[in-house]
Length: 616
Image (cartoon, rainbow, N blue to C red):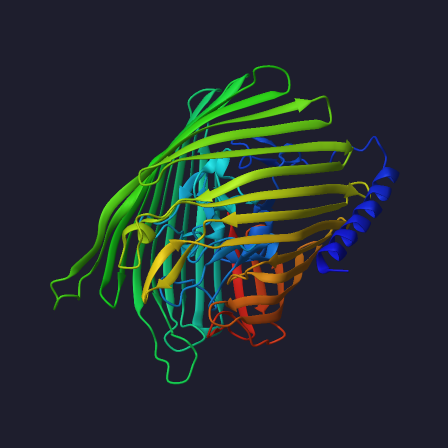
C-alpha cells in the first residue's frame, strides 16, 4: 500500500471518528467559529463561510511570544507555512540572508510566490519582487490572516502560493494607552519597544517604535534595526471613514558567511524601507467597499558597491453589494507600478555602471460572488482578468463552497488558479535575464473539515490539498550560458492539521501538523512539521512551553539534496506585578540542538532573555 493511500485512509478514519463525536454534541450548540476575516473575500465575513483555508493569528498569541519580529511567530502557528532564519535576530538581505517564506512548498527563491499584504496593500521590492521580513514587527499587529493556497483571483500576481495579510492596530477606545518592553539576552541582544494610542470621538491615532540590536552568535553577524509606525484615522460619519499610515525601517545587517573551511565573512548592507497608504472606507446597509492608495519605497547599499532605489505604488478599489438575500457581489480593480534603479558604484574604475533603470505595471479587474443557499450552504465563485505590460492578459478563475453539516461542523472545498508574473530582475536585470518569460501558473484543489467538540472547548481542522504548477521560472545553463527560462513543473500534495483545546479556563493547548509531498523538492520546505504549545495562567503568573519538530527540511536541492531535522523546545514565564508592570524570562532551544535552516549558516544553541513589560 503506497504512502498516498495510507494517508487518505488515515484521514478518513480520523474524520469518521470526529463525525461520530460531533453527532453526540447538542444540536442546540451555536457554531463556535466566530472569527471574522477580510482577506478571503475583501469584506468582513465569518471565517466559517469562506471556502479558502485561512489561519488567523490573534494579537494575544503574537504578544505572548515576546518576539519583536513577526514572522517567527507565523512559522510556528500556521501549518504548512515555514520561514527561514539565520541567527538570534535579523533576517538580513542579499547573500546569506533568510526570511524566505514557503506555504505548502510554494514560495520562490527569493520569496515571490507568496504575497505579503499590509492592511490589504501589496508589499514587495519594486526591482527584486520580494518582501523584506525585517520590515514587519510584532508589536504593531492586531491580527494576521494567512490564506494557505492561491488567492490570485482577488489579489493578482505573487498570490500564487498564498497570502499573508498583516492587519495593524487601531486605537478604538476613548482616551489613551501606552505600552513598553525592554529585553536583554544572549550575545548582547537588546530589544526595545514602545507604542501607544489616543482616541477622541471621531479621531484616533496609534504610534509604535522598535529598536533591536545584537552582536550575533557568530563573528561578523551583528544586526541593528529601528522601526517606526504611525496610523491615524477619522470617522467622517456613520458610513465613511479615512485612514493614513506610514511605516519606516532602517537596518544594517552583516553576512557572517558560510561556516566552512577557509570561509570569510560576506558583505554588510545598509537598508532603508518605507511604506505608506491612504484609505477611504464606506459602509452602508446594502453595500460597502474601499479605495486604497499605497506607496512602498527603499534604498539599499551594499559594501561591494551595489546600490538601488526602488518603489512600488498603486491603488486598490473594490465595492461589494447585496443584490438580494444571501448574496454578496464584489467588483474590484487594482493597479501596480513597480521598478527603480540598480547600479554598482565601484564598477568601471569608480565611474559606476547601471544594471537597470525602468518600471513596469500590472492592472487587473475582477468579480467575486458569494451566495448563501438556505441556512447551510455557501457557494463562492470569482474571475479575474489581469494585464501585464510585458506579457499581456491572464485569466484567473476560482470556485469554492462551505457546507455547515451540523452546528459546529463545516466542510469546505475549493479549486483555484494561482499565478506569478516575472519580476524586473528576471525580465531585464543582468545577463541572466530573459524578457520573453511568461507567468508561472498553478491549479490547487483542497478540501477542509472544521469541527468544534466538547461544548466548543476543542476545535479541530483537517485540510487535504493537491497543487499542480507549470511554467516555473528557473535558471538553465544552455550552451554554457545561464539564463532564466520557463521550464519545469511541480506537484505538491499533503495534509494539514490544527487543534485548539481549553480543558479548563486557565489552560490553553495548541497543536498543528503538516505533511508536504513534493515531486521535486524545494529549499525552505520541511516534509513534516509539528508544533505543540501549552499556556497556563494562574492569577498573575503565565507559563508557556512549546515544542517545534522539523523533519526533512530541504536545505539544498541543486546538485545534491541535503536535509535537516531538529527539535526546538522553548519556554517563557511571565509575572504581572500589577496592572502597570510585569517581568518575564524566556529560553529558546532548551535541548541545545545543533541545526541549520540556511545551508552552512548554523543557528545558535540555547539562548536566554529577560525583560520587563510596561502598561499605562
